[in-house]
Length: 367
Image (tube, rainbow, N blue to C red; front, side, top):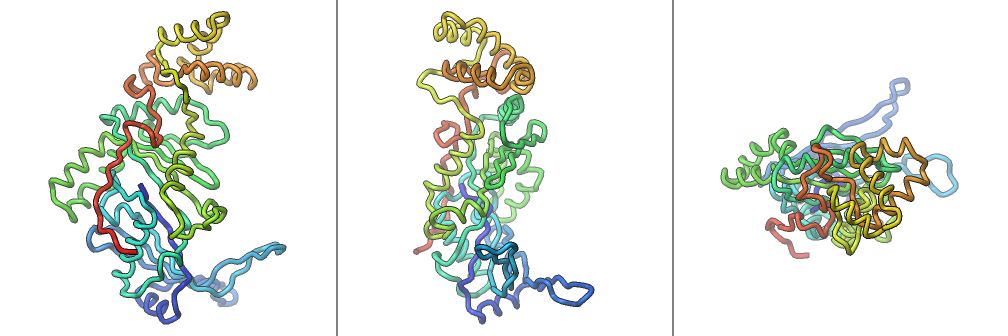
């Protein structure tokens, strides 16, 4: 699903910019000592009539440019219209499930909404560029406790080269220079931000209740794709060239697999004490007991503690052998705080059976 987006275009005439600026609020920065205007932009937040979702519109009157060989960027006069907001909320009044998946259709729909809000003809799709886009997937794990249990299990693992911040057992965020990852229990977030009351204003009580009910069992996983990714891509972020496959398979799935390192094996993954012992005995008949002791330590104390007790090469060697045997130290029957056994093989990837693939209907526009 596609959610928060930042779109920009420079393909408007001066008269079009004037019509837009007259509907926005001017904001400027002034150098106190000289009175020089350092920047001037026009900003306004407007609500989509059908759902009440907020779109933030900005007209920048200059931009930073850095030419090859130059040390520092400099500001040049150039007008840009920027549109920021949640496509999902703009379409449906919520972002619990069922959001759009086709980027070109969704962006075209959003551009048409901007036209309706401003009454100004907008450029065609090839003249819009994506500067940020959140790609999300929702997974129905059965109940809120299952969602919280899965998040607790992730806190027992060490994630090299990524800074991970947990907020209890409600979710976690992963910071990066090109992408940020987030996974969280959708129900508590939906209720805390007043999602049910907001949805009542644009839909029936029955629909609002159904969305609220489903939210409680949903794990939402997101990849925030930042500007450098679009700038380095072959299409440079051009809206009419971004595909669903590129966003979901090459970005979302790849980022979550790289972060969580799910074990891909033809063998069924095992987690419980008896199954792990049998699997290791079958796979490594001469050295299974020492590996089993390593697994017990990982299941009881977690990766973080174990890695402080052994060298890096020892850890890599033991981890590789356990993964080759399709043995996992997450979601075991050793720790009571771990995720439920029904989710032992779950990972938030496109092929997960828990993934919600439903797409809610919205008005499709002719290209």
